[in-house]
Length: 340
Image (cartoon, rainbow, N blue to C red):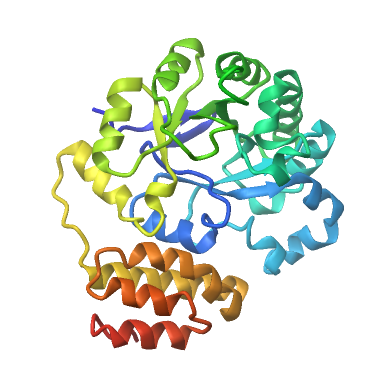
């Protein structure tokens, strides 16, 4: 059976369908909705180790309700979650990991896959694929911090297949990370040069599974339960991560679990989809304020409204929504449901 419990270092999880870390999307509100819909484990957006260390007063235990801490905080229904850090300095990564103690993460993930220039130009993210030895030292530092301050929670690493097609070094990079103490490797089998274009090469996940003893999480081009089943079957990965496939569709976790276990599942109506999106907006407002939350949710609602009658018209209005009342009027105006 493809859907099953998984052990990551000292961490036991009852299932293997994860929400991947996605910048600008996997905030507390969205993670909460995904947990509600059956995600077994969730990852925060990437967090700058340099920012944490440079601004220690903003991240003290007594500042957990500040806007700066919302990116790190556990959602109310998240019994377990992982905080993802990025950085290129082992000492800074050690200090940043130690500062996570008040948040009580269940694991710490090291980002070695982000292709965005503002991250890679600092030597972090996917740039670490060019310096595997440095990544190994970073893993060792974060593992030491975990053992000293976080109760020894697992340290995991998310990588790409390489910097470009001429340097597909995912296997050696993963081995170095595991030898340094990483408990799981997540592979998005695209190069940094590809960013999110083309297709991810799942054959590389298959190869990595055969190369290392640690669990491998597969990622890339997962948009349906059928995709999930095919990835498990073709690659032998221990777990998988939904990323873009979960945007505006947190229901994919419950749907995939039902598909993999042969259970009954009823697709949510468009009314239920939009009600879920609206609840996400309310949760996000509680964290970052109405004005910013309403702007952040525009992109999410563009996905939630796919397939809705008058969906294109609603999306046109939603891209200009500034308040919760704006959202309520737009969605009510579509005669789809009445928001309370």
